[in-house]
Figure (cartoon, rainbow over the protein chains, first blue to last red):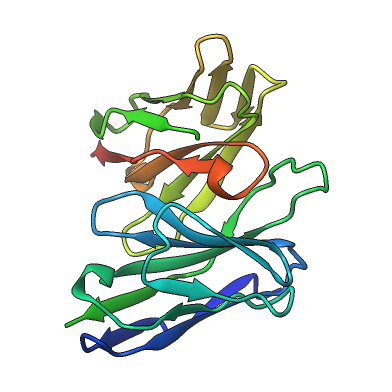
Length: 116
Length: 112
């Protein structure tokens, strides 16, 4: 298993440009997450999904959009890049029972984004 | 929603000494408390976790304790080694999504 994969590893964007950060997992996990981590800080939840076709906002969703058309993929879209979106973005996945009991989140290697 | 606090923010110990990191949480319904280690430039990786029906769990040099009444949990690392140097995050959570909240992190430095 590859686990959680993310592309690209690094990207420089100009202000106002758009891009999609890709995330895929091959562990048949139902839950997927997007976090951002600013330098020297903790992780903040952007969006999450409990299954294909279902997404919900996290703590810092403004400026981002997501979709979940398949169990495996959970892309994050930045429509109008701003310097404040300079960060490292981590995708994660986990399996949770229908009762909602949380299981371990496994993280991808991250995408480093610089907006100039 | 859940709020997780973590102390200290930085911790330096001599190689071979023990390190303790403490976290508190606010949501009494939280029932899952993992700890992640993040090395510089790498992804967070799970090192140990504990559920609310257990008071203590140990895995070699790492142990975690949970006090549900006081709503705090701690990470204990014994016989620290230079490779233990990293940022450690505690997490309080239940269910999924916004109920899974990371603490701000503790930067541990193990000095040779």
